[in-house]
Image 1 (cartoon, rainbow, N blue to C red):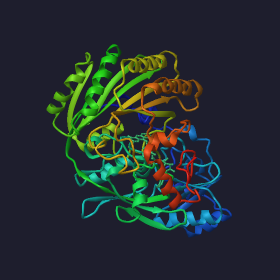
Image 2: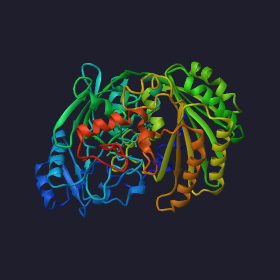
Image 3: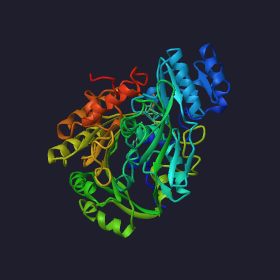
Length: 504
Ligand SMILES: Cc1cc2nc3c(=O)[nH]c(=O)nc-3n(C[C@H](O)[C@H](O)[C@H](O)COP(=O)(O)OP(=O)(O)OC[C@H]3O[C@@H](n4cnc5c(N)ncnc54)[C@H](O)[C@@H]3O)c2cc1C
């Protein structure tokens, strides 16, 4: 079977993602957490919980507090509360309010800004709420802490899916609340477009169900408004879609073809039939050559896909052009970069995927990149290859199709007229000097700014982005602020990039 590594393809998991036995991660740490002592106000909470608490200094704490990105390893919350039910989340929120303890929700821990941790408060971890079932009406009932690979797997057993992202360990709640783009998005829409209902624990500890009929304004805001803003989601209900076979492809050209390939890709990918989702990946590795590759997934036959891709392949002289028909689940495992069993396709202690050290930024292209813009992009990748320390990537994800048929105001996700998103990523080794890597990323982003729209993707949340409210939410920002004021007037759920209670 043809395999495409995640670095080759989306690079979303970073180089370390494929390395077995890399740094441990704060997943479900029942064994470690059980040994944690509770002190003071934590006794009060611990006695009321079905789950458990890992306080600062307890055994297991140094694993429990970790997020996916090693850049945030310095964050030391007062405790991590592992909730095992909606009631646990409610008790934790009420307890936190009573004792004026700051709380942040955590699902999969993949926040680009480290916003699912807090130096001064407590992490409310929902990773044990991870059930994935299909109800009699064909709707997926998903616990807020389920990882994407488990969502795919749980629904594949019924021949169905929810469109979501490619990284296996991302949490469904964080992904869906900020949008959720992946290889089925042009066919079935964003993850948030398929969200029918969410159960949310609000700042006063009450739980509400938000859907088209109950709390419709909250329901609107939860579909793209971003995690960590309105309350703690415990349960999500999604529309599902039947899936069977798909065709996937992988293309690579010599770097000398890069300009014509970018031109051909942006002509094809955003306007292709809905069934095709395509990614273009410009990749620089230290001391190595720059690479240009493309990969994608098509709901249709291998022959039809090969036909569709002809103009893209012909933009240069491909050194690789493979098209493979496979089951939908096999494709998800491939995109995830999972070798071995599905059980291994998790972070430790369950699996053998590793964490990563990176920073990302994003833009949207609402019009095709000009010749000058493409030259700039290629130059920046080449500059990284020559002078960088680490690796650097720009990933172009095709929009259009079902994503763009939703009105900008229909959900909080406003980016409905983009041709494609651009994600700039710098990776380096944990413990290495971050500075040259961050400098490269900053200069890449600054060089591209005049050539792209002022928008950015809220799921690639960026603590350095100025004017982020409009960049993430555009014309939906004011309505999001109004929803925030209604559901969390005291701004209990806050981070450096959370929706404010009033206009700034
Ligand atoms: C390796 C990698 C691959 C990725 N691939 C994709 C992709 O293919 N497509 C895509 O669209 N995005 C992708 N992303 C971005 C991803 O969607 C966001 O980082 C998302 O926020 C992660 O969700 P999480 O639950 O894992 O993270 P967390 O860090 O747990 O949460 C993210 C934010 O949501 C809040 N939050 C978490 N749980 C809850 C809850 N239950 N209720 C309310 N708020 C909550 C947190 O406080 C935080 O602010 C990727 C990210 C990484 C690191």
